[in-house]
Length: 351
Image 1 (cartoon, rainbow, N blue to C red):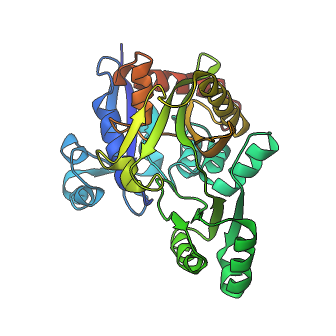
Image 2 (cartoon, rainbow, N blue to C red):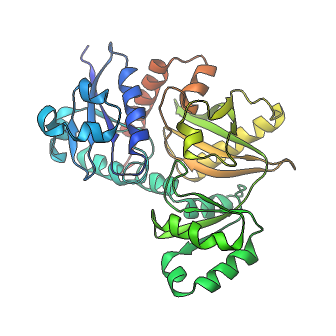
């Protein structure tokens, strides 16, 4: 049987390129060689695609890879991708990877891929718009307010006053379209607002102010399989920091995770899974996704961060929850590939 050529797209142009490298490397190493031929594809900082050997996949950082591309890799024009791969496993995270950009390119090239299509990917990246959609569907979300950099430049005093009128201290300010807690700031006093907004505007032209939540943080992987949409087991998150920072997410020993949850009652866990599935469907996600949120002391469930994809590092929520369901990494990766191929076979127009 001829093996399926799976292009694992990693690296990328976003602030999460190192996370993407780690995800893509792990996917590549866990592809079942009996059925799949892995083709590592590195996206450089300008969006160029390079087919790279394992010696480069194993490098520690994207900078290490980029410095060796000309001598050791092969540049692949976009229009030649379909001749090199049969399927794309998107391991890009953040802008140009999670937001519909690479999905649109693959649609034009006629290459099936993991995750949702262009619109749902864009919604999964835009925290402001996704909250509007979820709220309209009757799904609980935190109180929030968008701040555009133009209005902040024109009237900083008015913006500061409006924020203080709408949010009790402390509250969060974050870029509207970033992941991995990049650019997120906790505002504990009025004089911290300007600095937090300026940091958010380094990454996007829209910042989102969001209420501070006290409760238990959770993450639910949703899997679409054989026409059915169902969550895997729930993970309860206890970060070391005041909130779930970049270091808590990716530095070993910085966060405790419990799958199944330790302190969320079974009845509440079932309700959380139902809400996570509703969020997945409301945003039009396909194939798989990760829905994050909070279980509050009063029993409410708020969805804070729906993700149209998930990190694929060895200790990620994805592999932890798959393991709880009895699936080894190679098994769950194969499931994602075959599910996505079936979804693309049935689509009418772009996914």
